[in-house]
Image (tube, rainbow, N blue to C red; front, side, top):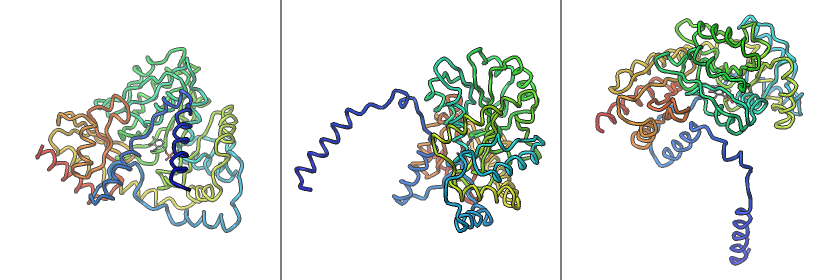
Length: 408
Ligand code: PLP
């Protein structure tokens, strides 16, 4: 194309661009800062910096071999077409059986909807209930996508504060006080991102009792880290409370448990009358999860579980190291996390804001972490460390932080 013509078409594109007007709700859609930190870390690495990534929330292990093989076999066997929108029946049956085995709750495979990742369930659940005039209660600090999608839906986002002094569990009385006649959905997440906190059973019991006075409130229980618990803790699923079972949406998936973040595979167990609208959302959005991934998920649930145990043991060992080392840094205070693979130390004693610490650590000493404020306003004064990295790297990162703070 001649130069002049090229210039004209570029001008034309700019003009067209100025005339494009996105819908107003797009301005309310947020993001997940961990991905931004990952991109900035990759850029610094490309420029020659040695970056230790304690920012991103994904296991640093490989998907177990037998799971990978099941996907390859599925493709070779010709499973490359559409599947039912809610997922292949053997996988939904395996989800039901696995959930029953772990939580002693009987699940109807028809209530299970397979989706491309845990995030999709939260998107569907929030869009199903969120609208102007509606209130949705969500954990703060919490996974940033909850707040982002609530805002996008037009609903009012009502933060449920999770405090360091409660080891990032909640106070049931405080949460029950947040409920109004406009509350339609309450989001819970245990074990939690970004704190590693585990909701206390006494508080959950109290919450469930109180929820009986608010029958309009549906609970989205994000239990994606349910198999990563430490110090002998046992997971208590919200689905195991008979009194509210008919209004719990259970979110789980394969990403964390089986080191399958990039496969994009998750599931929800929906209340009876909600599996159909969830499936309709799936049909409108992605039709179905790709078939070989569903066969991989089936192999993960029905095959040997030793890789899951080995990963949890490795995370536990790293957890002990990182908590001890963080607490040895002047100005830091780190609560012992009960689950997941995150620590959320307070950095209040350093006099820095969360964002200053995040940016300084990344740019000056090559340690990627995520500012607590990326998870809500109650996250100010905290940093999230993911310990999905080797003990050697964790020790090296903390040494860099110690030296950096001394030199400031
Ligand atoms: N829920 C929580 C609490 C998470 O931390 C994450 C991922 O970081 C997800 C859901 C989403 O998982 P997935 O990668 O399967 O979409």
